Amino acid sequence: MLDFKEILKNKELKATQQRLVILNQLDILKHIDIDGLYENIIDKLPTLSKATLYRNINELIEKNIINEIKVNNKKTLYEITKEPHIHLVCKVCGSVMDNMCDISPLEEKISSKSDFKIESSNVIFNGTCHNCLK
Amino acid sequence: MLDFKEILKNKELKATQQRLVILNQLDILKHIDIDGLYENIIDKLPTLSKATLYRNINELIEKNIINEIKVNNKKTLYEITKEPHIHLVCKVCGSVMDNMCDISPLEEKISSKSDFKIESSNVIFNGTCHNCLK
DNA sequence: CTGGGTGCAAAGTATTTGCATGAAC
DNA sequence: GTTCATGCAAATACTTTGCACCCAG
Image 1 (cartoon, rainbow over the protein chains, first blue to last red):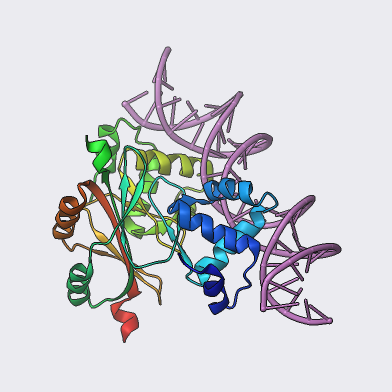
Image 2: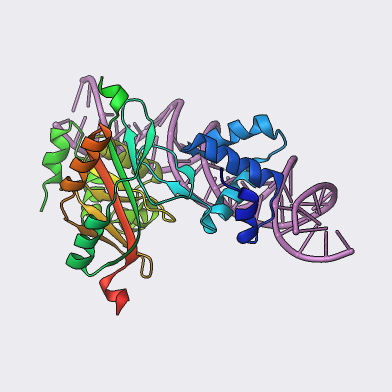
């Protein structure tokens, strides 16, 4: 499990109860929007205000501790920043899955063809997941 | 040039002045957010209300005549739906470019590995464009 | 003890909706 | 002539901000 106290310290952010709970819940819930996150946290930390949640989400994105996933027709989701990966979004059940497929061949093709230096990527595939195919 | 009257008719939408101007401007401006679009249209059609713009954008997305591009740290952009393609977003100048690179090899790799049936994709690469590299 | 973080309430933005009027077909 | 679309204003939803108090370091 990730040591969020340490991570926050490294980025010069105080390890407040609020931030630790936000990060823990994000780690558990994987891909969640702001309201889902809020509802989940309120059980653990009933005093949390939405203002604080918004402020922290923005701060944590800024420091690259978490990152946003923008899916069409959905509210923005958040996740803990880990290895770069692809997202598979099921149109039937709505679930979002991580996929570790290596996209560097594609990146190289594009870089060379377009003279564009790629630094990061956001790749989403929409379709039907394993369970919903059955 | 695309015949938007025809396109609207095929989707059973009335070809109103508002819709035609919205589509024409989108076609010219390529990747634009709602406020940029509104400001551009107001010159051509000063009576357009933002409510109508929002309603039409939603309607046109629903009918797949236009589509949204969700870029991190940017407002949602809109474009006329054409061939599937990738977006390259320059972190320096902010420009958004289309790239026609074929991603089907990647799609096949993922489909087979994950047992996920891909129907559409949203692929964004962030980095530095040709001009800003100089 | 000090500075950054929090909660609350209020302000600021963004987006949607109800309804009377108007335009497309 | 009908039906659907529009403009306006109001409602709703979303996000940020100011400020007094609080807690992590």
